[in-house]
Length: 156
Image (cartoon, rainbow, N blue to C red; front, side, top):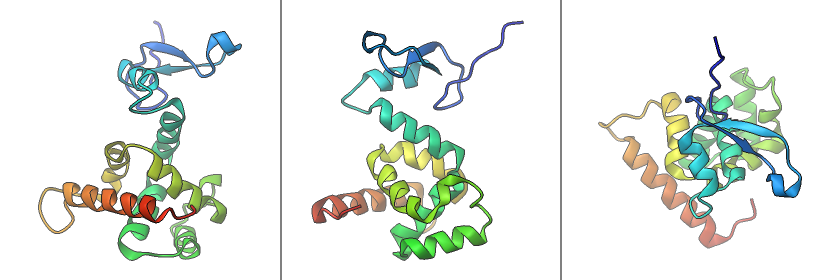
């Protein structure tokens, strides 16, 4: 029986072998992608291969990204405090929780589509349709936060 490949980005059934570096530029490494993710790679207006790679990494550690998201957005915590709390959660045995990486994670979160980010972290946050913190309300708050950072041109 032939092994079914899963999409590198979303885990759906892969339909394409996408060249990470185009063949025309000497690339030979491929990743498996489903039709939707493959279309995103080639729709340069909507996203890029770099953004998809960031999404793939975020899917591996959604707890860390949910923690950073919530603490920065609603508690305005400093990076060192977030790092120390992640350490208490025992989520730090990987390179994605190093102190120096918290800032980079936030920057990556700002660069990807907000709906994609929310899809990754919502299972951790458990946002519903009722109450103060609904999916739509938090998504709106995140968009305002992103716009404020870009307007202030903060050095992340």
